[in-house]
Image 1 (cartoon, rainbow, N blue to C red):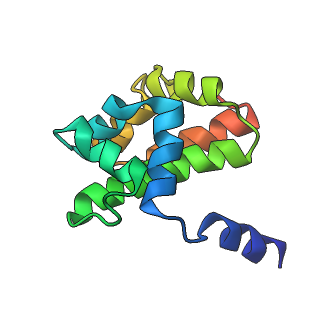
Image 2 (cartoon, rainbow, N blue to C red):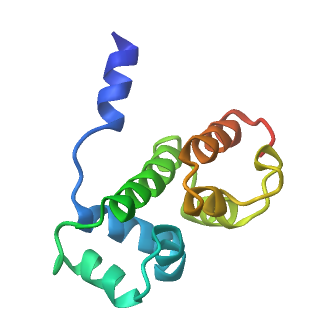
Amino acid sequence: MAQAMDQKRRVQAVSLQEMAQTLVRILGRPPIAYVCGVRSLKTITRWTTGEVTSIRDIEVERKLINMWQVVKYLLDEGEGDDTIRMWMFGMNPALNDDSPLMELAEGDPKNAMGAAVNLVWGLFG
């Protein structure tokens, strides 16, 4: 029962605007554009203001959601914005010294989430 409730908490619907605002607050617009493969930072701004409410490119949407899920997991586990930012940009031994942002940009969210779990549980950092 507790596991099902935990899963429900992680998959609650969230708007594009809320995802973008959280990610911009913690990471800034350029890393979001990098991970999602978006050329213009104005696109990210349009997401944060609510001017754009959906993403037409499924791959862009998938990468944004994956990035948000990793960041949201860390927030829910009590990690602060500064820690998350440094961790997302930094070399990570659990990822062969790649950064979690690189893993997400390359389309490997499972590795990034696994490294996030390692951070929370004090394994590898």
